[in-house]
Image 1 (tube, rainbow, N blue to C red):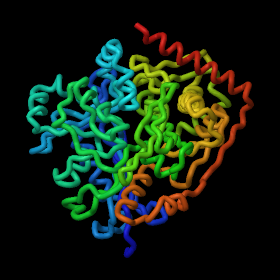
Image 2: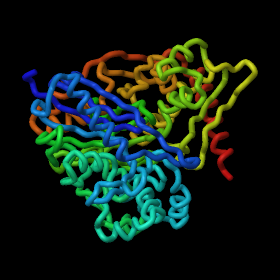
Image 3: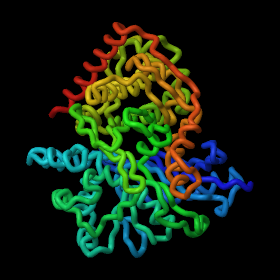
Image 4: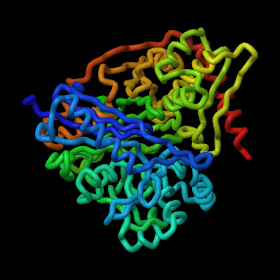
Length: 496
């Protein structure tokens, strides 16, 4: 084919994908591979960084093959990634010092608690916009430095490199020539001052992280390196954390516009423009993207277990053969029969921020079936997102009137109906739900002049389905109160 294309590398928590997009934002080729999840101890989650790179390269090349293009037709590469997941590797050999510690991992909870007791959280939030929670990269880096033999000494000697997954991919893509991260990913590390736009010495000192480990921070859009090997000469021109990429891919360029991504977790994000809005309701302030040195900020609420609860039904309980089957199972009953599932498998994120909480099911009776459990699983996703919407409405001083949605689980109309009902907002799903990859593609395309403006991107957005509330407010109030009691019970169980 003669028309040039953009290649997106979408590196997620459970799979790697390559997607080729054309100028209209249409997918021309897609390839996806799942990779192993490692759980060496309760609350620990790890990935093999080399397996991540291998699956990401294979799927990128596979998508190009399906689209019928070679490297010469690719105008640019956009990268989007699971955020906070932490890799440290040897600059000379490219070998990771240990398995990557995943964003869901809770092993640094006690260290975070100790910093809170020392009164550190206020300065952390003021500088980084984040909370002292094991979710973020900084304490994971410290754990590696303190627990993997010889790593701290080698880090201080400058022979090791730290990065989130975007950095790891760029390093491998460029044959080790570029050690970079973009501002959106940097803002998730606990090490980056979101107001000054650079690594923060006080945070590095607090967490005991040597500056020699750190990547260069670059814009989210713009050429920062070139591919080697099968992708030789192709510009790496866009980088953004997955949630920021989805906000961009949804065309939420104006302050006040919001989206929710239903992936492994759920992530609600609202554009706040050039203002880093401080949340009074336990949300995060984060960098949305940085283009031409100009920062766009966002408010974010993070749910740790979203679509992953469906994977648990499939892989853990084995009550469904595949993820889409949960819809038919859940639709076979009118409601959850009073069952509430709180999927705190990796603690609770916003607005609770309780790393010690663990999953629980409430309301089981002799009449409870696997269908009720499937329904409760879908409802748990919608309940958690509604928690975030309520907090965001308080911070913004106004409730959302509509919600743009994307991510794999957003294909479930039943889930979206639950979402519309619980939150009492209209939910809008675009025809392209792969907006995370699309956002990375748009950032790369803008970086190489493939697209000229945000207006071109906005014109590509097409509505697939719009779902409004069907339940009345009294019924919803009762369901929400039941959810609140279930979460309280889950947190209470974890108190000791």
